[in-house]
Length: 379
Image (tube, rainbow, N blue to C red):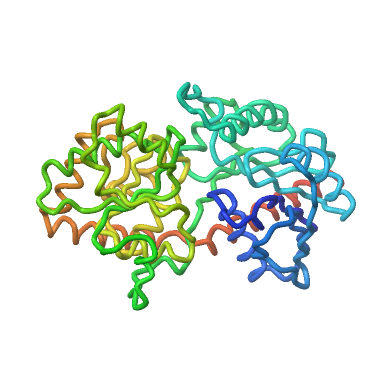
């Protein structure tokens, strides 16, 4: 097999969810498959996190914009290198491409109503691009991969795709997310004392940042401990707007916002947290949910979309639209020691069922299946 893998953004320093998924898939395939040939197409960047090997070739394509890179430069480079199957990994693909396609469609949030309060130009442009591109490429894809049974059923229902063209492959998490003694005090780069709540919120409405902060305010009014809240990647102006709208000035002195947290530091951030708040309104998978669990940290997560599927029915599941529900569970963890300890074990056991190795094994099986079909068509 000669497989092309689109990995446009993995060389950028500040990676996001889809970047980590394809990066880990490539690294695992590089370890397990020495027979087939792979071309990994990337945009130049500072973080060279994958190097070429005997049968895995990293191809850098310099092009000024995401749409031009994907729609013009990517199919051109794939054709030049004789790729027989092109796997596009981040929801979209070239509209004009005569190479058989496999698409990873992580979610179809872009087809759902857009929150009118979202002022992020980057998020809004990405939403529009996906709405324009995805309907034009679905019919050309040999397989459409998604990352949970929830999202698979959602895609089949809303896009009317035949089930035999769909594949579900769970994500994994990195092996360094585990209970680890922070002998060097790495967490202190971000917050002064352990035993805090940790929340990976941002301005995307689905992350439920505003309602989670209201819940934190309610927690503070009833808690005798009043734990700090560590938050990453949130602009002070955005926080000030939430505080002003909801009259929750009591949270200001208890919130710590250090900016971007380096991924390699996250195990220590999870490990020194009292609990991790993963209270999104909607997720197609939710890698941070597994990361927190794998570190032995109690995780408060939502009872919506894929989160009960990934976290299991034994996880701490709350109604993400109820700030009272979120606050009540924060307080229960703080006051019920047996419950807190039990949730640590629930998380560790659940996370052990997922790995990037399993993800890559299933992906390789899918490539082989598609190649067999292509071979039969030639015959």
